[in-house]
Each structure stands twice: as C-alpha cells, then as structure tokens.
Image 1: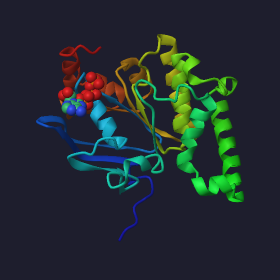
Image 2: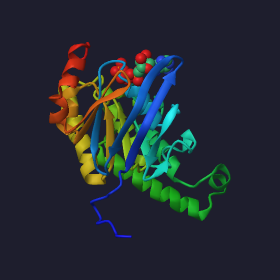
Image 3: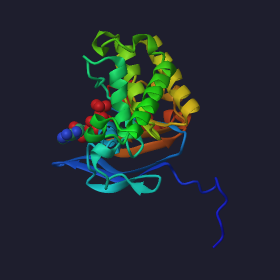
Length: 265
Ligand SMILES: Nc1ncnc2c1ncn2[C@@H]1O[C@H](COP(=O)(O)OP(=O)(O)OP(=O)(O)O)[C@@H](O)[C@H]1O
C-alpha cells in the first residue's frame, strides 16, 4: 500500500462523529460532526439553545451522547470513565468558575496535578522515595504554571478573596496543571469587562503558541471568538449550521439569519 505523505492525511486530534443527544423528547444535538486539528483554536458558537453546552458536556464526558462517537487521537473517549477525562488529556474550565473557595491558589492548582501523579493513600503515607520525587516534580510544575499565569504573588491567598478575572486565571492554571492536549473553555469571557476579555484572548493564544495546547471554546462574545479562533463551528437548533474560518462563518447567510432571529449579538 502506498504510504501517505505525512501532513497530507494528518488525522485530527479530536473527531466529533455524528453526535446526537436527546433529552426526553428534545433533540439537543442532531448528528454533529467536525474535526479539530492539533494546535487549533476552535470557537463553538450559536444562539441560545443551539446545543453548545450540550456538546461541551459530551466532550467533557458529563453527558453520554445517544448516538455517534468522539475520538481523541483515534480512540473513543466515550468508552472511558468520566473521571478519567484529565488522564485522557482533556482539561476544562467552568462557566461560573468551580474552584475550592477556601483553599489557596496554590492548593487549587495542585488539585489539577493529581490526575498526573501515580500516588495513592498508602504510598503517600509511607512517603516512598518515588512519590517524593513525584511530589518534587509536581511542585515544580505547579510553580512554573503559577509563574506563567502571573499568579505567584497570590499563591497563598484563598481564591474567594480574589477578583473574578484572577479566579478565572486560577482555573486556567488548574486545567493546565493536568497537561492537557485539549483545553475546553466554557464561556471564558462571561463576567469579564472589555479589557479583561482582551487580555484573556491574548492569554489563550499564548497558551496555544507556547504549550501547543489545542483549544475549544464555547463563547457568546463574538469579538473574542472572531479574534482568536482559527476555525469556527456554528450550531443552531442542535444542528451544524456552518463551519470555516471566522470570516467565512461571520458572513454565512444562515448564521446571520440565525443570529438576527435571536437575542444574541
Ligand atoms: N438537561 C437538560 N434536559 C432537558 N433539556 C435540555 C437539557 N440541557 C439542555 N436542554 C435543551 O437542549 C437544547 C440545547 O441546549 P444547550 O444548553 O446545549 O444550548 P446552548 O447553545 O448552550 O444555549 P445557551 O447559549 O443558552 O447556553 C435546548 O433546547 C435546551 O432547552
């Protein structure tokens, strides 16, 4: 058999294949398919009720699709237990920030590294040497990430006392601590002011560029999606309406019609 030229047939990092989700009688997603290439920033958009959150929840293994498959590097993630999501290489943030409010920034980020250490209660309590080595590496990784996201000066502050924008950065740090191949961002611009959205956009791009992390973001803030996404998938009523570059999708007549008929801007 002829060998394919590398790059020409590069398989997608993530493949969403004919995914459908039905809640009772409501078809929240209807046969959605798209690919994500390694290193891509993909924006998932659509008016209210389009199915974005449902798809996000399938990707993060919170929902099991009624039909279809989701493949990460060719392997189905749907056969893996939901709590193994970060071991599979999928990191996520939450719409309204889901941190431990009374724990320090450092401890919140350390939680993220747990998915990557092989420690268990027995070896932890016996302080086995390989665990200590693991812990040293973990501490270094956490410190690197705190430095990278400019959080070292608040490392020992409980997150509840921090501004919302900083808490969002802590969440990003926690997700990065799992060393994800794909980072899923659920409405990261929500609750941020204009300047913070701009800073966030730069940060997401920097994370992709510096760390080679592939990013999927569900976002209502069109300015953010259009300025940082390489590829956009638009949903409406559970179906894929359009996909392409931000310019292609922004000018797609069906997308324009869907947004004009909704309350979203
Ligand atoms: N848990 C659920 N049970 C029943 N119906 C649901 C559930 N979650 C979502 N739906 C329905 O599925 C459809 C898609 O909803 P979804 O929340 O995924 O859309 P969305 O694009 O994220 O909307 P929004 O932008 O408002 O967050 C909607 O009709 C919604 O009412």
